[in-house]
Length: 132
Ligand SMILES: [Fe+2]
Ligand SMILES: [Fe+2]
Image (tube, rainbow, N blue to C red):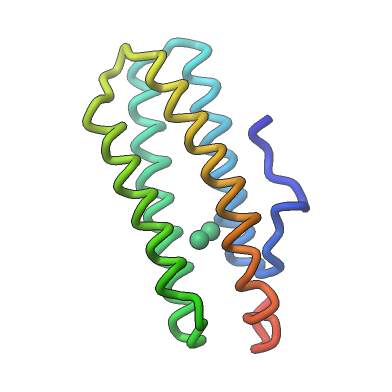
């Protein structure tokens, strides 16, 4: 359910690896919701959010140094996500299982849609510049 598959490949290995880690973290998050380990749950949510930010920075840098034309729009999509996820963090408390499920659902939908609809577009552009 929370596993990365080849359909999500952007054909740039460094980005695929980071996306794979995001899916692993979502899977961990799903596990800690089921086990109702509240401390672990909060920890995993924060880890996921901070890793997502780190990934956005790396991805934006890669696009920037290669003069990717759609960089600004892509950054806006990342920023919108960061704002939305902040709302969740503000509302979140350790024992809030329903909200944790809502966060997880949001994360999964967002990452799948973003990777397929937005990230995948930089693949051919970067490949042409020798980045695979
Ligand atoms: Fe992205
Ligand atoms: Fe990405």
